[in-house]
Image (cartoon, rainbow, N blue to C red; front, top):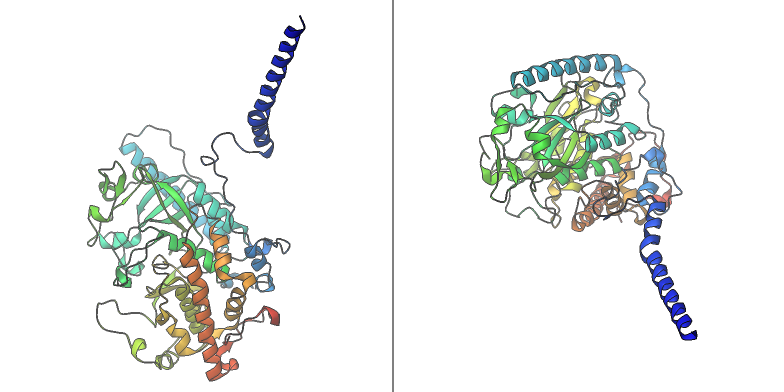
Length: 516
């Protein structure tokens, strides 16, 4: 009958419409995901791995959307670097370093095996092997008189990847904490302190990193009444300091990256230190926590806790062993008073720099200029805790200052501590290359806050800094240029700007005058 055939046609049309809807809304999105290379499932559980900061030598000028790449493509960052002219300008000899670390690795494997036998641990345990291409070893071999790593070094990015991905094989207290327990030579450390907690983690490739756990939320500001020497150490400040140091082209902060650490698997289960084991506990919220064993903060109130096991922190690559590359720890001429009352001479005497200029080694060479570089760096991050600085003894008086321990930076974005700039304002001298970099970063095309924001987004713990901290960098940069401008007005550019290198001049239109 005709009406039956019409019903069949309507049914077929309905089924076709349903099939088309299913194909369009369910099957086609899945096919598109597969073609795009995405994994099925919730994207929040499989977030893409962020890329690491681009190497200045690899930055492409055609990448117009990236201020960071444009910055690293600028002539200031692409000027030829001074290659080491001989073994005296390279920190380590490859043959000597490989031989030394191989002996240490064999000794560590032997002790680890004896430790496992003593505890009757029967689980399989592969011995560590030292590869000549290990990223941490390449980082050590790349240290020269001019910086911790060259601009074009691929080892730096590889080292950051490895510190993020490699499993830990041991965990222990740092030398600072051991000094407080009388378990190490106190002459080898700068200043024992129990206010913070840091651990030394060793990875499966025998590399080491300093782990500083999260102690303060990013949105929290250090209270106004808090003294700088009692402030928390912030893991995100260590990460941000490395990125800023790289952007300023100083290359004096060891490579640092953020990582989520499983405190049970990566620390408790691999440590051989019984004291460290003894400070682990489970909180009422069922989170695994631990605290520092020291005279000051040996209380559970100062513990750091996972959630329930995962804890974010910073990992800073270790520098070469002191036995292989000795370092000097030197008091900062502009050291602050570490008491609740009293002031240092530089705080009350505006002519203090004249006294410093008469003292060796600040009376010649570039040591004073390096101190001012360090002061500029500390002012940008808001670090008032620079009581000492370190140098490799091999490079003598003309070596660079290592910018270690930056965790007390980025505490207050609403306050600019201009006293940190005392070396610059009192001595009225600055490296020409440093000034050119600062002027470049003050331009809208390379704005410091923008390139820092872009660089920090590449870290696994992004966002590393809050927006007010990023904007504070721009404000402090202008204060630095204003200080230089006052010096030039008072003494003339020839006496203020030290021509430290024959680096390429920046075109006039790329310069910001310090008096503006």
